[in-house]
Length: 316
Ligand SMILES: C[S@@+](CC[C@H](N)C(=O)[O-])C[C@H]1O[C@@H](n2cnc3c(N)ncnc32)[C@H](O)[C@@H]1O
Image 1 (cartoon, helix red, strand yellow):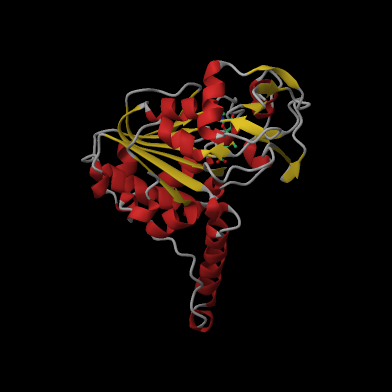
Image 2 (cartoon, rainbow, N blue to C red):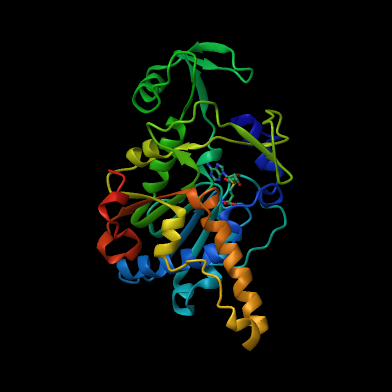
C-alpha cells in the first residue's frame, strides 16, 4: 500500500486527488464552517500574533484556499497557512500558502486532516498472521500489531482485521505538533463493536470506485478505526459526526422559502444551490456520517462552542 501510493510511481506522487474523488474539502460551505471554527479557536487562544493554519495531506490546497477566503481580514492577515503534502504540487500556484513535505512542530492554531488517515498505509491480519495483497498469510504479527488487534479489532477466526496502529501513530504525531490549539481529523471510520466484517480496502480512479490495484494506478483507502486513533492522541478529545458538527457551526441546509423565488429569483437559485451542497455534506448515508475527531491542547474547550457537547456525544 505504501509503495503503491507513495513510492516513486505511486498514485499520490503522480495524481491530483481532486481529479479522482470529491471530498468535503472541495466545498466552499465546508471551508466556511472551518473558518467559523478557526475564529473560535483564535479567540480561545487570545488572538496570537501568528495563527498557524495547517492542513496535513492538503492535496492541492483546495481547503486552505477556501478557509483563507472565508476569514475576516484581520485574522487572515495574522494567519500562516501551511500545506503539508508528500506529493509534488506540479505547477499549482496557491497564493498565501507555504508548502512543506514534513509536518512542522511547535504550532499555535488549527491543524486539519481531511481524508488523510484513510490513506495512511496499513497491514491486514487474519488469525495472527499478516496477509499479502492476494490475502495469503505471510508471517506472524509482531507483538505491537498483535496487541493492537487484540485490543481494538478482536476479529473472530477466519475474519480479516485492518491494523490501524499506523493511523494511531500518524494522528498522535500530528496532534503532538501543536503547542496550543485544536487538531481536527475528518474521515470515514468505525468503532469497536461495529467493525466491518469484510475488508474496507477500496480503490478510486477518475471519480469511480474500482478494485484497488497495488501498481500505482488507483487510490487505495481503508476506513479508519477512529476510536483507537482518538485514544492514541490523548484524553482531551471529542468525536462527533459531520452532520452534527456542521449543524453546531451554523450550517443547517434548510431550503430557502418559496416566496423568495418570486421576490428575488436569482437569490432563490443561489440559496437552493447552497442547500443542495449542504445536503451532500450532511446526508447520513454519505459525508454526513463522516467522523470529526477533535483534540485540543493548551486551551479551554468551554470557550469553543463546537466543543460543548452534550454527554451522549462524548466519545469517552
Ligand atoms: C485522500 S487525499 C485528501 C486530500 C484532501 N485533504 C481532501 O480532503 O481532498 C490524501 C492526501 O494525503 C497526502 N498524504 C498522505 N500521507 C501524507 C503524509 N504523511 N504527509 C503529508 N501528506 C500526506 C496524499 O499525498 C494525498 O494528497
